Image (cartoon, rainbow over all chains, first blue to last red):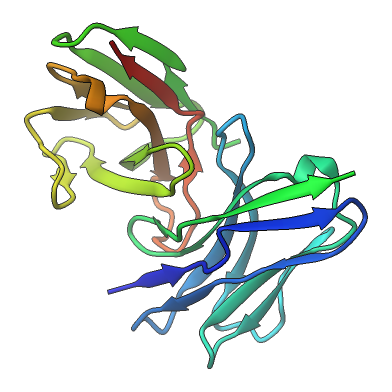
Length: 111
Length: 118
């Protein structure tokens, strides 16, 4: 069975600062992907970043980057230079036939 | 590319009536579509998986007679909430995986449907 755990229900960051959202997971698969999705108030699910488990290099997409620690089964998301538009629910998820989501982290960005 | 259209975006219905929600893949074919339910400030919970031309697979605890899923073509899946009750009020989101894509690939999501049962 696959599990995804997000232990931070809420996080807050000031505009232009950096914030890190945590995620741990468990899987018996050897070939898998990890994803971070963002859900703004519009409720649209937006793929933020993906990481392939067999790649050592951490994925980066503009201001978003991950810290992937395979042995520790940890997959955190770092948002640099936070913007007001980054305020949203963030979900960590593990690839599979159907995506199973963590409980999410609500990110508040303050001016 | 990879656009999933979900309709309606909002619907209000009376208790006891049925509501149909459509999920269409606009620019790709989807052999598999997934239906999720999301309560306020909670995560997405997988309800069922629909495969084109076959019966849907429901997650444990989801009533298949209440939530009817039909996947009649490679671009359309429908979720019908039958005899809706106020406790069925929720946000329903569909997602799709493109034909030929790996199970490691991300899903493409519709914009969701907010159902309110009065």
